[in-house]
Image (tube, rainbow, N blue to C red; front, top):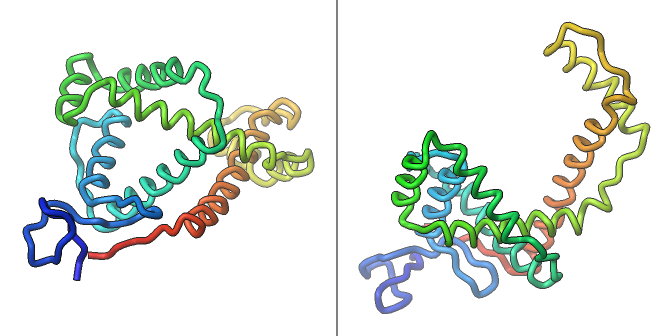
Length: 211
């Protein structure tokens, strides 16, 4: 029987359904409407005013991202991540979102369609900034890249990709080392993050509720 939330609390599927619990992080529930709202917000932040479709696979992806956001936001709070100039960083991020729309009117129209305010968007972007700082603070030191790794990427990947996109001579490895280093660091951070999230999900009793 599906777990649902009704006007009177938790009830059986026979009762009129207002929302459904689709996942939980510890004792905190994540509902179907939260996932749908997150989907609309993601589209808005990408500069899309369209609602877009949310099929089964897409729903699961958004649900999983929402779970990970909650886990990382809690970790950022617990670890005391640097909050200096966080509002300024959030305002800059909001400015980048605004520039994705064709005009201020288009931006405001999309904001109204989302049924929210710039203040709430800024609050969400502050959480996003904190989360990114947490990942950088926690994982980047462990994602160090050695020179042999850079040289291997240069000969095995960079040169062939450069030839596909350019007709000129390939730049020497020393010239593109910072670019390659950052690519490899990000790859390592992504893997470390996946491992860390798996640990957090197990430790925080993350559950998926089917319906």
